[in-house]
Length: 80
Image 1 (cartoon, rainbow, N blue to C red):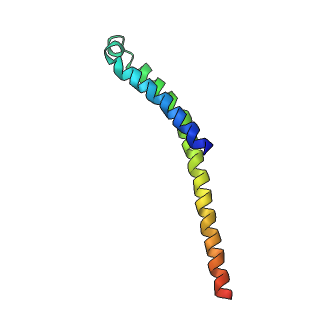
Image 2 (cartoon, rainbow, N blue to C red):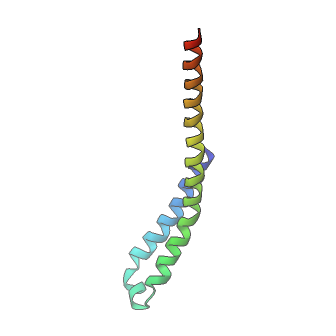
Image 3 (cartoon, rainbow, N blue to C red):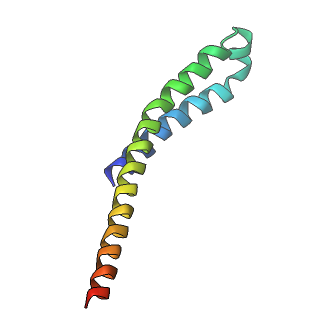
């Protein structure tokens, strides 16, 4: 649960960057800052992506472990 909470916090930081860029789109366009705003948003998304991959791996291991336990119990029931 800590990963999902941390990921949600990091996504909210990225969302804040996007909202700021959208609200000041005329200023960004006037000073040719599109690439800078885009790279700032991309940088803000790097940590949530890493946390999401870690969370996916953890969930996959748990689901895979459940599958192994089910397979073992089914084989044991055949032997009885």
